[in-house]
Length: 356
Ligand code: NAD
Image 1 (cartoon, rainbow, N blue to C red):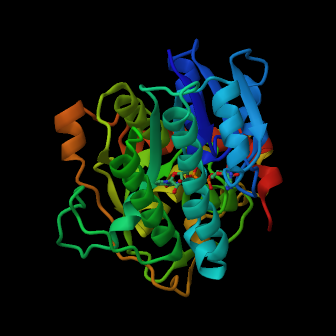
Image 2: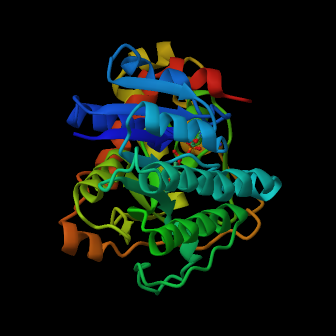
């Protein structure tokens, strides 16, 4: 049985991880620490709030004393660190908070973990674990012909977001080598699924189709990303936490490389098909493009490319498969249909988050 601190558990991947974990390990004790920034949404965790072995704490990873207090008072042995500023566009318009949260904030939790789990004889836990959740963006960009990033690929982050995540990865690694903290790190490709804040590509485009708003495509729309259904990310972290792979790094990917235009057309065609097959949807979403005789793809507009936009990311996840037998359950085609179902069924979750 584990006793976990999940930082950033009211965000997209954190919330999905929390549900994944409580479904699979219903007896485990879990504390979520989240600062509830614009990207954090406490109602995402509503279904768990009455469970006696689940606790939500509003607070920041910048508050080392709070993290130490939670580790001691709740007798926690595992930290999974999702808390971060995560949106590349925001890191271009305002990088400071990315360094504060992703670098200094991560360092604060490491300091707290070291003090409680290693330095203090009364609270020391030899079998503690600190799992750090990171991104493939730390490796920089690939051209069309290069093989995917392996764990040996040199770090070459290009945006303030990826540079802040790269810094946090290094400081996590250093706490293992220098202080003996039991750490593991995963560098994962683009996630998609339920509870994703509607500023990111897939939920933004789905909710825009439902509101008959333009679908703004950066540059040519040909940038390529590898996509992983969010539950498959949670499953990967679970495998690593269950293993003795301490001090190790794993790349997690979905073997699902897609360029943005192909994703957008898949979303548009899937939405048009849903509306054609189910007349109730037009009643639920009267503003939607397909409820008004339009094709969703008519909403596509091309906008100026993002500054420093990386061309392609791709993951070589063979180490994870070989050492821990990891395979994602979803293909992009199956995961995207689950995601569309979720957004169609959960308007009350996403509608209050829209800014325009
Ligand atoms: P998100 O922006 O949806 O959620 C981040 C959460 O962290 C929010 O709930 C926010 O309130 C919380 N938070 C921010 N600052 C905090 C602070 N100081 N203290 C406590 N909580 C704070 O992000 P996400 O997409 O769920 O990403 C989670 C993690 O996974 C991040 O570390 C990100 O770098 C990494 N990651 C994301 C993706 C992706 O595709 N979304 C891919 C790979 C890795």
